[in-house]
Amino acid sequence: MSDIINLLPDAVANQIAAGEVIQRPASAVKELLENAIDAGADTIKLVIKDAGKALIQVIDNGRGMSPTDARMCFERHSTSKISKAVDLFSIRTMGFRGEALASIAAIAQVELKTKPFSDEMGTVLLIEGSKVKSQETEALAAGTTFNVRNLYFNTPARRNFLKSNLIENRHIIDEFTRVAMLNPEISFSYFNDERQILLLPASNLRQRITGLMGRNYQEKLLKVEEKTELIGISGFVGKPEIAKKTRGEQFLFVNRRFIKHPYLHHAIVNAFDEIIPNSYFPSYFINLDIDPAQIDVNIHPTKTEVNFQDERVIYSILRAAVRMALGKYSLSPTFEFDQDAFLNFNPPAPGVEIKQPVLKINADYNPFETSKATNTPKQYQNTAFRVERTEPNKIRAIENIYEEVSRVKLEDFQSEKENDSKNISFESEAKMFQFDRRYIVTTIKSNLLLIDQQAAHERILYDRFSSSFDKGKNYSQGLLFPEKLNFSNADIELLGEIYDDLHILGFEISRTKENEFTLTACPSDLMNENPQKIIDQIIDQYKSNLMQLKIDKRQNLLLSMCRNAAIKAGTYLQEEEMHVLLRDLFVSSAPEFSPFGKKIIKSFSNLELIKQFNA
Ligand code: ADP
Ligand code: MG
Image (cartoon, rainbow, N blue to C red; front, side, top):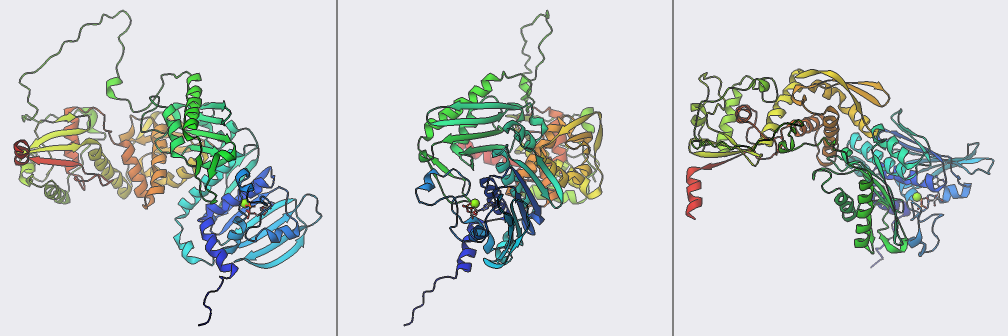
């Protein structure tokens, strides 16, 4: 039998390996930026076209390459950074396997223009699918430019695998942010589809963070600093009031490499314990300096995982360092988080006598007893709980819910509806009360119903906001005092994407300065919220949805709005509010499920309950 084993041609081997190293355009961006930094550049420009699929350009003024190095740098395992295997453990530069350029060149059309400071002339080299197409001598400025065009041109399967431009751009912004944050002494600029997104002059870390995250960070950073024999900790944490509901603004670096480390993340979050609510994440920008011998870096270039030998000790030191930073900053009582209604009390004026509270108990009160339905209080007639005219297809919705919650009979709803027979809605006269500030408890005939208040309101708002989109009509209300808004540069990008839709939903935002916005109107459902917070949360939510769900832009925005505008678990509701909420719920498009797919209603029949007691 003849031999059948062949060595894969280099180009093919490179293509396969390339897919691993360069998983998406952002990976190429990261490698090129890191190379520019390793080359000692102090000015770096990044230009992106079509989310990196058409062009990734990185221009640096670093040390440049000789004509031979210009060719060599594309060879696999070509690197000027390691010569012995042991170096792997002490390496502190960015790249270290000499793989990145070989990989990029295997799957793109790359033009390299480079000239060392001391050389007269520079080199222009074209390489495509690992094949050198041309190499010429040209007069160039000192430094290096990489033009990476048509990434994945010869691996269409991978190209098709890429996500939308929005998502790929987001990954690029993330990589750029990490690199720029670590190198505040280097000046960066970033252009996306001909637009300048960022211009970051050389400065210090505090200013760099502000440049990247937005001007509202200026006064909001607390310095973290600790030096022990084992580890050096330096950087900043955000003051508690800028904690967010998504994990976006957490940056942990080890020896100036970005890492994800849930355990150490926890150390930082834990230091904020009882200072910010559980569902919020503090912002942090922290670098750990540690002897490379003490850590085990998974040396796959796309991995961001590191193991520490003394993990527990580092946990304690890190937590203590963050605690200290927080302690130095005396916490002022200006929090604006969703406060429990219990905490909202007004202290009596000085001199006012405080009387012993008297408990009044209505011994005849029976929560399940039916009484005349209360009218909608005025304040709700025009807000979140507004009921719209019922349409015929809503009857279907009620039938559906009837099937869903089973046992509850349609006639039961109907017997309790208003006398207008066309207006089939849930006009229950049953008593309602709130359990755990989370569920509305009521009865329909011989059934006990538990309704998740937040999920129910999300459904109602979803219908309302989507009808705004459909009809182009919003429930906007002008603000008496226009509000100034500030956003991070990345958020401004996102804001641009959802701007028109936000407008349809009732937000009127105008840009007053480069980095400053004014809000003049707000959807009436959100009138009582802090607008900066609500828009931040919408953007936040939108961001995290982008990463998790494959949903279209509007849908994403709708969901974000519902999540944020809905009354939350923990909010006290008056009985009238519960009535209106349920009435709206039962005329909504899908009363049984929230727009997030969560069950809204649970029903228990009397028989079911009786069984429970007989068990
Ligand atoms: P690594 O960075 O791991 O060494 P790369 O494939 O990223 O591997 O780069 C290979 C080599 O090419 C580098 O070691 C460096 O010598 C050279 N090089 C790459 N980019 C630049 C640049 N922007 N300026 C100067 N030299 C560069
Ligand atoms: Mg490199």
